[in-house]
Length: 368
Image 1: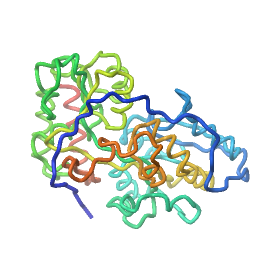
Image 2: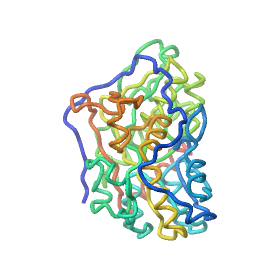
Image 3: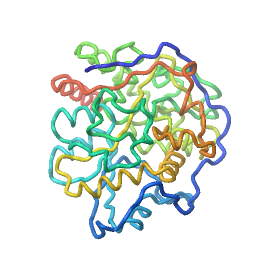
């Protein structure tokens, strides 16, 4: 089942032009599917990443409020900062969630541990809008447990005023003493390890403990160079110039670049992680029909466009990608041609003993 994707062609893409305020402006919805109020009064608990849905800011659509208006279903919206945080919450079974949006490798784990229920796509009339290349991927080969939401890759964002111009297009810049106390790294184990593994030329899904040891040692060597480990805090630090270099998800980097015109972006020459985040329904969900309605709503062309423009992530929805009015239409960072594509690897769910091993190493790195 393991299927690491490594594309042959490597090209570093740098965004040098300032963005022009891309953002979906609210308008009356033109709906493709029919939504009724048969579930009015239901409370739908949605557990999603922070900063990961159009929420009404900057004249954007408030996705959840529009859903509530159409259906009478109340959305209880909660957020997490990493797949691992979400997994711990779901695993504890202390709270029942109806909708979650994990990344590919985490979906693979949740399926393996029987923590998701199958999704009846016959009740999701907009499912046909999902691009076929994002259906049946390694983590859900039979299209039973997930509906693609966003697609992304990880790159490096930097402030050219603070770095003195262009910088080496490599993960090594996070270790470069020229940027001491101004560089950031991820505050989650898998992504932080990835930055070191790419430098070392490793398979991101290695089961060799010696590989994880080597990556951990490299992270320890670079820790003193860092200002901090961050997740959502990266927005304020990079937008205000508090930090000068950070690895982060390309879609979020576009958002930051729209705020601060000194920010630039590249995919490191060693390669990077590609991911597909998808909508799932946990095994213990209490409101499955409402969850299916919510998923169908998120796939609506107008709603999917609102989210894609607000978030800046690549969309798996063909109605968005083929829309010439979409402000990221044919954007080379989000939708690179084959000739522009960096080398990429997906994360896979790693067997529990190796996962425990690298999580222990990560704790050691944080305490180092």
